Image (cartoon, rainbow, N blue to C red; front, side, top):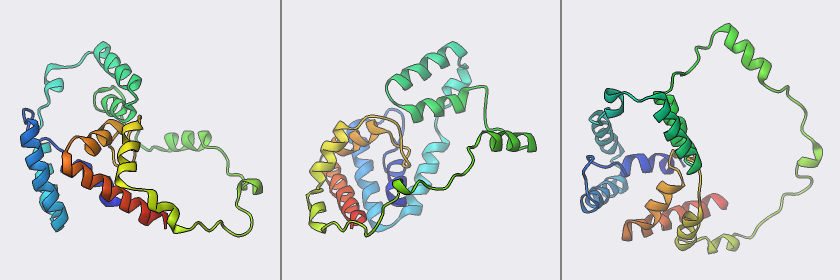
Length: 191
């Protein structure tokens, strides 16, 4: 699962802002080869290098509160909650609170008190045993169709539905291989 979570960030970074589809696909193929060979450190180093040269144009030009609000609202309407939160975190006037005694007290006050579990919500008796054949229909094509129908915010991989849709359909055989691999992992987890 950790591999699935970090894979998009390591494999899908554009090498530079003006990289075209052909160049991007060549880098993706090379990175997939490194991934399959287990050269994760090399992929990490490449990702760090790319991240270190990203332009900070918005910070250099400054971003007005009105523009920030507009961009935030647009991202929320598109269902890109993670991107919207990242935007506010990066450019907003807030930030992380220092965990002072006052903040800790306020967090404890807002947290609901623990209650015992409702017995009706718990599985009673023997767990349902599911025949593994049920999961054989979980194929790469099912994963691809599901990705196309998915909308919404990012999960643990930090990739929102748009990124996953793009990965699953835009890169020919690499997309098919990814769909098949995700299906295989899902079948493995289901068993």
